[in-house]
Image 1: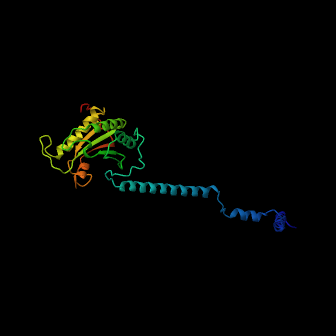
Image 2: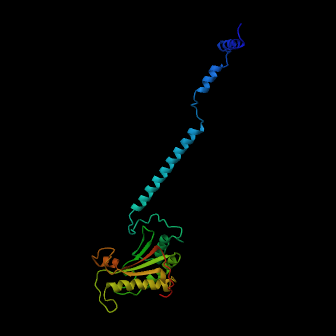
Image 3: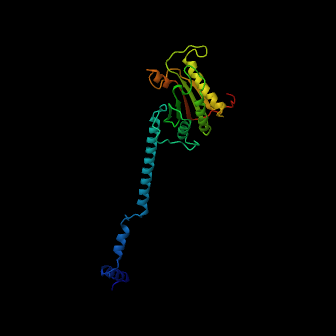
Length: 252
């Protein structure tokens, strides 16, 4: 007679060897699935890795671009202002008026000849009156037509906040008088006369002016005849873009 343990073993063996209905897993298959490693990953893990790579790449590109821009700025030459064609002046918002156009208007209203106006590369405006329009030969007194022009130009200068350079020039003819021992004194005195007129009658603050005399050493054209020499006898008024220094000087 078989024992109870033997009967239970046979019954278990019978069930394990019998067929399992379709759509169900037997115990052996379940044990096999549990023993296999799970190689699948959640979708957010590779996505976050991709975002991190893109962020690092973007940061590297920005850094490289900033370094190239800094090197380009440092490599730019710092040249002195040069004359450029005044076709499209680009004045900064701080400028109250278009100095270039207003200066041309002042020249037109005064009906002066031999007057050059140039827009510089740093946006300074240079007005140069040549020939005997300013002064008689060998003298430094202002002539009446020029005073009318300076009255109009003073209206333009007063509407700007910048420094004004007044530079006197002569031709190569030598001079040796009690008032002007050389062309140095003559050129400087002429520039001073223009400056004093703009201060006294143009009501422009004295601390805005810088006065210079260049003598015969910076001619606009070669001194070949009387006509070219007359062009070199000139006074230049440069309305710069430099701020006025902090000064309390009030007397000319």
